[in-house]
Length: 310
Figure (cartoon, rainbow, N blue to C red):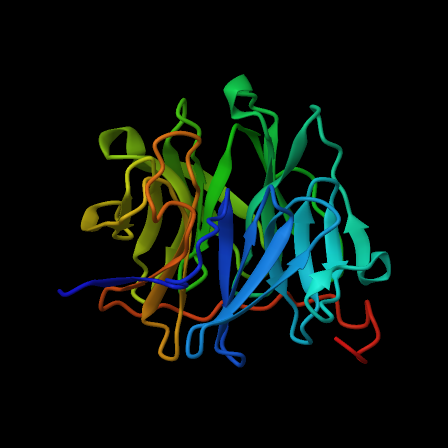
């Protein structure tokens, strides 16, 4: 099966330090993503290359939109509703905290997050200094009524890899810290959002890289970005590796399906502190002959801000 890999912004010279959380908005035919330490949200329309960006008051690592265009963002101090006006610095009046967990250790923030197919937002936390190898991270669920759950999974070092099977019967979660490198599967109750029967799905110690952000395709294949492994790896629902795509970056960070027919995997990347190449820290469009599914918008937030200007 043929594969094409293109840099999304070939003329952009400034790389992202930590590009993360790509998300395709079909009605805009546009890709959004964040650069975490830069506190920036980026938007590009691949058809014409138009690029714009917003600056948050704090670091944001994961986000979703509701049906009206309000952003739900996971940051350093909680979950926020964000109204995107003109590109630039987001005003305090457009930044509203909705919920916050009790962080059990200093220096924590939200990390990987996305909505399930029923519109609930799931996100995990981590201690930002990965050298501490702190297992203070947890996984949370934020429902359509604006209720943040108690921690549902404990003891995570670097939470990542959230994904949901097309039939909403399985949830995936990974820990990408070098000391963990594991992907788990859970039974998922679509009606209640309950998870159970945690089990090892893939031991990434058997493969190149660490399991960072992920996406699930229309056939149920689980695609993980092999951070430090320069690869995309696809695992079948049985946990068997059946596709491997080498990328021109050393630290791919997260992937998401998009494009007009949802046949493109958009991949963000991290620029390493030493030994970076010209592509590290940029975003790529990978066409690999596989179709994905649209991301589901967050089911809440309607009415958080006036519809005018959202």
